[in-house]
Length: 111
Length: 114
Image (cartoon, rainbow over all chains, first blue to last red; front, side, top):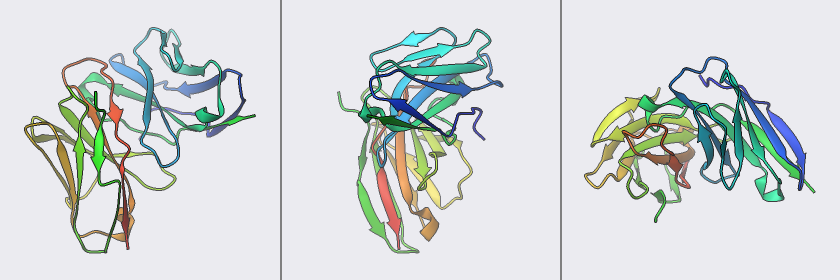
């Protein structure tokens, strides 16, 4: 079973920041938080991942709480092309490429 | 730098037949994982290959088998196809030995069993 809990769906206005929450209260010390998104009929696209520090790249920012039990993915200026299902996954180093997906959050960006 | 490539992109098979799907990992990656994604569901882990051996396996029957070649590319084979095997099959590549490395997915192979 997936070790994360996410809202089923969210809406966001175009141009505004999209904040996607994820709960991973049973995360272990060696587990990373990964975020992927999937646009209909395409393969999952890597967004960002982190262990305990906040991370930022050209796509998004990842904010991890100090106790690491939850995190938030931030898309700073959402566009219509950001409409997708967003998956939050925890996975440890020893599992390599094994990711356990949950149902994800369906983000709809509206004009 | 080529990403993860999969072939074929779409195929249709008849119940009871066998199918082979192919994956080339991202350049520099040595580990390949396969996933099955049914319509409306998240991807489900099938198995993972490293150093030409199956290293981990999810809850899938023995009809699902795989292979990894010396150049790190991989094949997924499914025997005795069932209608329920219709799904998007995804390949993911990664690099073993690197803590917190990035895992990349291909665009997938759509399999329809009729």
